[in-house]
Length: 127
Figure 1 (cartoon, rainbow, N blue to C red):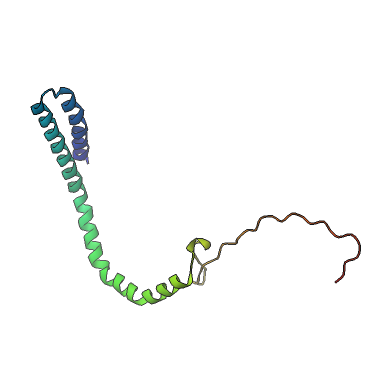
Figure 2 (tube, one colour):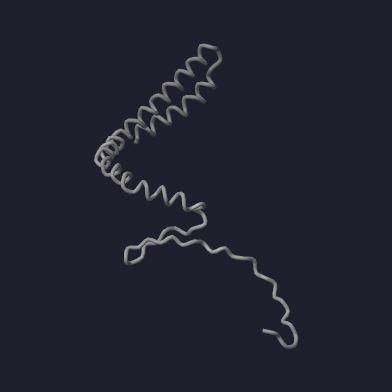
């Protein structure tokens, strides 16, 4: 990561310094080449830092691939049916798992605006 930080500092510092010193087109071109080289070094450093993590992720994908395909084959029709039945997911709370293993989806209650209190009729009320 220190290489990445050094490359970033070089890339950021090379631009303003080259722009301040550039008086002729040749010097301006030199500044652009320094910026390009700094950016190239920066991205090469990032890629070298990410390479081990990407290789590990690739290995995990190879291990989990068959299991994910089996899950999709078995659960796909049920999930498609559920998607057709639920029109608006924002109308539901997040799923809850009960102690017995059941999963429930609670619909959010729509709150009506508070009604104004009506005056109670005076006198007898017919039922």
